[in-house]
Image 1 (cartoon, rainbow, N blue to C red):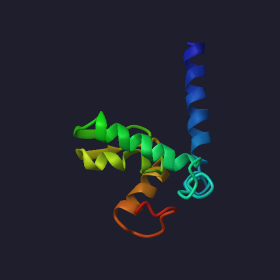
Image 2 (cartoon, helix red, strand yellow; image 1 turned 90 degrees about the vertical axis):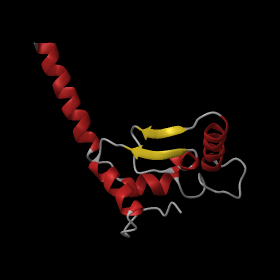
Image 3 (cartoon, one colour; image 1 turned 90 degrees about the horizontal axis):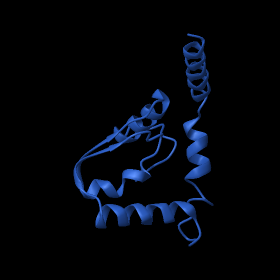
Image 4 (cartoon, helix red, strand yellow; image 1 turned 120 degrees about the vertical axis):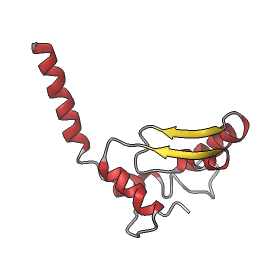
Length: 115
């Protein structure tokens, strides 16, 4: 009984911590230069995109692609759009889902333009 209560408290604490997540700060730090500097060969984001593109064009395809824990990002499924008919992105945080919806619906106020 005590162990179960400890798990519940741990889950609640983790959920509370994640509610403070700031998608705009995350996107700014991880998806703008220098990490996303497409003029540099050692930049991490272009490397990730190249690896994902290779995986989707050479190894993976299908009807439905489900991305669990998308966060406020699309980079991980961009190449998948070419080889899957339908994509579903999911995330625990409503704020991340809102960020993706704003971009998808072209509502403005997005922290990063994925086009």
